Image (spheres, rainbow, N blue to C red):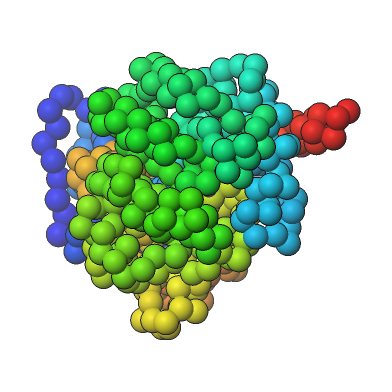
Length: 467
Ligand code: ZN
């Protein structure tokens, strides 16, 4: 049955999308085999079976979605955009020796490099159906300029919503940490710069394009004090907290040796469990850890490809979901997931989790789609605004082409999207504005983005080599 909302103010323009299958990812998993969506300015005005109501005023565009599936835009909950210019390096490493190999290069980035890497990372994701993306940026070399501003300006060109998690590192080798001494900030410097980014850029309004979160990098690269004061800062400002947690057995060993407890207990002791917190990975979790996450509402960014690339292990996503832990999907940085796409993570989440103890009952295709949409929105604190196709939510919508070579013989459109090859995006809207049209980005030139990223990747490699 169709539902619709009475607009509070006159609608300036409407977009009608019809004749497509629709997976709404609402509370009842409502789907339509042939339905419609009406977009009124930046929000969804109606969704339902059959054609759109006739006699709508101010319709500026009608889209025939025949052969397509319409879903909410995908939400990426963990990434490191800067890594777009250091892909394909240290390819046979685990997390710790991969980090040690790459820190010296990463510590040389500047505004120009980060801007090019941001365009590359976001262009790749947006072309594949992402409409909201979080970036965890924690490398701030001395004298590198306004990296947060450079990233946000580049991101705005591509057009997705951003949660920029302002990261930091202050525990270097001399303090028992993993990063080299030259790659870290001081505790005070990191906190001040994070607060400045919050004050300057965080926008909490409905339909915001920019959220800022507080995001010390990981237990093995930040001090206990930075975690404690970071949590205090985030709560004083009413913003979210993000970090890496329980990624590898090496991290678990590190926490036991330095703090006398596992990562989850350490996070609890520093104020880092709560419904305003989400953590990347959470691979090595005990039953008690899963219960603690569920009881506190702490969210998880599940990154199956990165976890496989770095041989980290398989996160217990089915157990987390059954316990009620909020879970979204993440690409993770593209130095540990060179594909840089999120729609392929729907498939990888499903496949990787079926290799675990729950086997074929681990995840369904619809659960995978939910992780990549509403699950991600919840993890980023935006489930009231986006993540499902429901009246009153932002019109962040993707129209996937499923009648081509890759998918035309799979009758169930959600199975086609999740199990099949990466589906082409015919149209993607962010707040009703097209960011992809017929597979091409509208905000930036894809070839130009690729060229500029390659130039900056070479420049970084040259500088890192001492040239
Ligand atoms: Zn990461």
